[in-house]
Length: 432
Image (tube, rainbow, N blue to C red):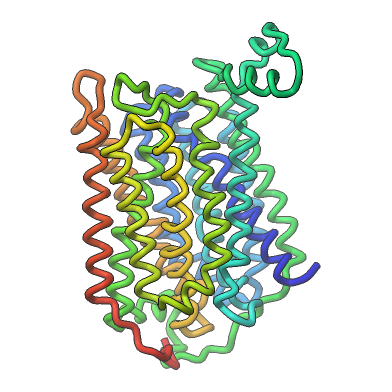
């Protein structure tokens, strides 16, 4: 198999795992009877794992000389843990299994990035390989449209012809306990994909650790990665990444609930079995954005490309706040997700690879995943449920407009900060 195709498949499986369970877990946890504190603890497992992984798994991948085998071991253990989440309904077993899964899964996002960059001749080709992750996320989302169908109602309706059958199926979503039971399959599917990637990792191209090249080569890889922050442009980008990560995770926290809430209550009123496909429209657009990312970077440069990505978040929440009654507009604006992710987060990964020493590749990626998947997500998973349920909900009705003004303001300020203060040198530094 050609190297780029191998890396593409690796990314597809990597993000299929995450995409299988993340979009629906925000509604699934309350259905199990978990209170807001318990929900926050479970959702915090992912960002906590990103912080822990910075000091252990990424260090292991950088110094072991065999990151693909670290990837295999991580997905074997993490896959078995997420499988267990599909078969438990009690808080403590669910929390422990999710924590184990995240501790082993989250660092693999940095590791797959570093494996990809190590095997690509040009870092700007990363967009084409990372597009596999988008495809994987979409493949994880759409099948659940049919998992959440009330097939008894479809059979009772006896539709004639494929078009009538499809319309009947999509018009009869599961509800209540039946929907809760179906949602548990998301974790089973994620576990199966994780075990598949564990096996596939053994046939990945070898990415032996680079010889230490930085001036602090005797230090641990994570310490050298943190030393990158002594460069002002790196520090500015790191802080802006934290702000954009909060906004990005606010989207995942709130969008599913917003789409599913009835119109009379301020939401969009989309049926439960359509929520995941609607949100996956952004991933479809992400494919197209990834295809042009290399050309966009060449034409616009680092700063402008990333500013456009952040402003995509601001535009999406602007539409959420002021045009909630138009379902068509809300659905169409999901396409901005491609710009938000590719033009900022994917560009950040390419920038980090270009401006960091190769012997700390996974740890440098982990430094920014500390913000993207760690601290930013942790803040969002603690603050977002509180804002929605306690601050902007009165009498059971949520003031979505005021709620969405929060990430709109944060994204706008982050874009302004990046535009004013991010000034990377023309040539990358020779050392970390």
